[in-house]
Length: 604
Image 1 (tube, rainbow, N blue to C red):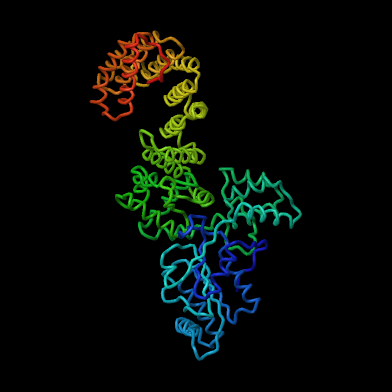
Image 2 (image 1 turned 90 degrees about the vertical axis):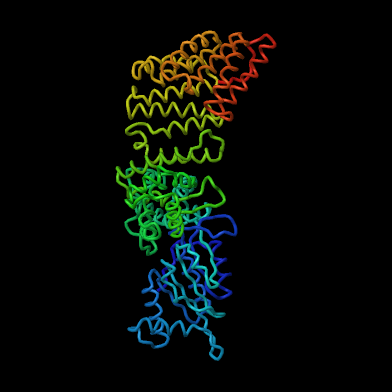
């Protein structure tokens, strides 16, 4: 029985490629895959239409009279393959199907080319090969007049051995996805705005299986495209809620169930039991690229060790589990982009998240946040990596915001905002911390220390955006709150005093800034000790504002005294040490000119 043709089946590029490959005879393995660099073996997933393409090819070849024998075998197990061959042997060769192994062997022997026999044109379709090991010893023979066509989600090297060739099947293109939805709805006299259909196709990741079930839902229920998109976006609902009651085209499973067997099988490969919790971590991060270092970081490994209870895992174990997920076409691993190595289709992510309890989501989200923070370099030099980490933080916030604010605001929330500002996007950083302060206040109350920290960061980036007056005002309002809640000697309170002095100076009051920093320096020495980096920072700032107040000589002298301490404590190559050297040269120059108020670059 060949699966019926999907109602709105579309010819695709892969159709022509398949016909060209099959024309030469031999064995072709059709594997679902996403677009990837030319020349590579591409990764894939379930639901992209492999079976439909194989069925369309088989029906076309049969209807054109190009075949004498067509055998379709559901190849999801070794026993199913043997049974399919045995049935063919019974019908073609009158073999005893009760002795399945013997009949199956006779069928394969019959397929072998024989020079003294009339040539037989045959096509054997092995649909949904679940495990390459099941096919050991059971691949049909190579033949000039016969072809074997297999479909699979697997990516194991064994599938392409013995001359078997590979053709990949990707997602619909955006145009194909739009055309599919338009045709399916038009057949039932339904129309939707093109931009809404295109947006729905994007929401579904251009996955053919998801598109067909979405179209069926729209047709069956009569709801509009916008309402269906809202249903998909509703985090209180699951993918199963967006499935039609009756699946179209005799589909055996919903989108939500499309990958469950693959996940189960991945969990049985190397590092047994690790693939599923690893995929759960990845499901909370960015679909289009997760730095592998996040998933192999010490916090992520510790989380996976605790979840699996399998003893001390290592980053190498996690790498093997990632390979298992790739072999089952559940993820892609890109070798060409070291910062976005792991990709997961958005619907696979959604299906995995739907299986998690609230407690499991919270635990995985905090572990993912810890992993992001561990992978974030300090100082931040690689802008591409930083952008990827920020994108993953945003995805994590969108998918598990509650978990990132309980029992407190996770530090990665602050790291992402400062990274954003550090790239020069100061206006965006200001807006980010305004939103973060409001969000933390909603979760934890306005007097929580994390709210105060977000207010401090908001003031800082407000000043960096060019509004020193507003920054100084915000810090002056923050300081009494920090004194009241944290105490006058808390390091965060001292930091607010430091930045308040800085922005007061930037508003045109350098003498006031220097006076405030003189007092702050004494308090920091008392609380933190003379060699603490924050004490060195206060000394640097005091020297700077002393120079800005007109005393370049004293500024140069103070920086000359500070430099050896920064070299000793931070090292000669630390950015703060280099900054001190820069400012020392500046104020030495100013002292020689007898000035102290030039508009040079701030060294704070």
